[in-house]
Length: 260
Image 1: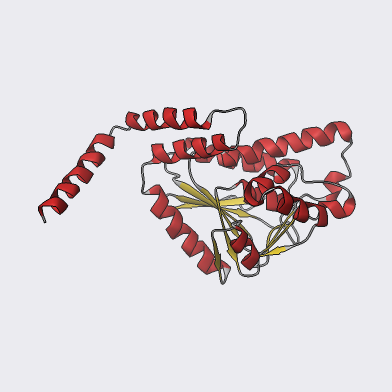
Image 2: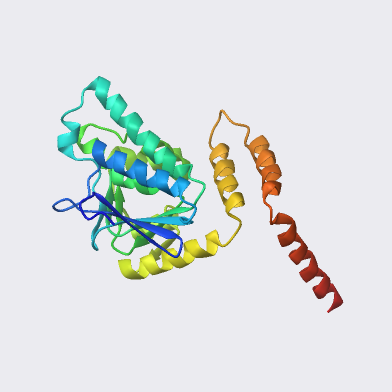
């Protein structure tokens, strides 16, 4: 684990935990940190020992407070578009990952920090977690895909409400809306549950897990025929060398039940 990096990682029992390391008071996204995150996620793609990922913040109060204002002050119309596209590319890399990635949100997830959480396949939250897109207060909008992912999860009207007002969403409301899968009392317990939950998922066929990610993402892409993607994915499952063996075990179990 590199203690000088903005992102710290630890691999244990197949689950890679990525910690957003606070710089002074909080983890803030910059071009440098986006590159670091991209490199870590590339390792997730490439390293067979990594079966699933947890992304969490340092400490008990902050996941990420978004993009540094000093970073925004450097932008003009031309390089702002490039900055947004870079962020979108990194978060899409997370969203498209064939291995499950879970955000364990341990406090405030604001702006691009909220966008990062939304790009993960699953989200857990501690009871003190707060989600918000506060950019509208200073005349900016989310740029890393937040407008799209929030709309996909909440629908147009509800998404516009939170995007236009900057209103905060607490952990309980986030769970009721379906933004998070589970709310846990405190961070340590949340990380234990997240690891247990991910482990139960990765014990399934890893090839099929990656195909499911592709199929679900296709359902939200107007340029893709999701049904055809699903049919292709179903066929690809039969590439697995152990599929027939697993199917035969199910057949044997069914036969035993019929005998009983």
